[in-house]
Length: 275
Image (tube, rainbow, N blue to C red):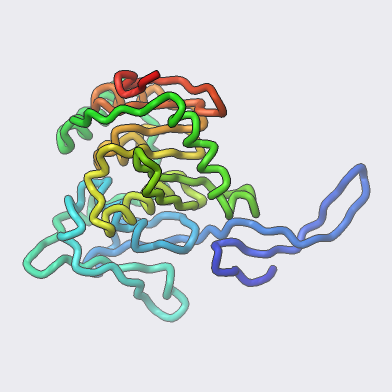
């Protein structure tokens, strides 16, 4: 196995079989490593991710979970740890005069987290989200032609996917396409957190009038992240889950699924789509 390059990919030697014949060749795979997130030295979460843009990932996660409400509450996000851990441990400190309020006993551990929910649990998830985030009040409108372009424009920007086939992508587009943020990661949620974190660092939240495009399915977790960032539209190349649809409708988010070429389905918020 060869060393990881800076792109988040790793070169590996593999054996390929075609019609019974074997050949050796070098392939590229996406890097997956754990990231321990600490708040003032206490472990908050452990997530598997592709190294790179870790500060964006952490900030996006803290915003999505309601641990912080604004980038102004954060004083610093820096890698730390013992020799051998450096790069896979990151610590968050509060801004002067601020306190990041959280309970270590209830910390999120993404390495073992299951987000699928149904019945009462699903209803509680939607209610919990809306209890801390107001439903979207965004009068933005998006043309059918513009929505059709989004997934086509995301594809060429998926550099690591083209090389490895092993990562997800998320992109945030402004209505006039003058501002585009794209991130890739082995985790769908991580890619979105990195995009939202970058937007927060650029003082771009709330992200009204923009569309979040994801390369995988639309889960409740991704709807939650879009709503917290006040992004009015979430576009997925794949299917949404039932809880994602319910949450999107409650939060007044426009949810688009199966966006491929010149066709797509609108599961919530169709009033923002214009012919």
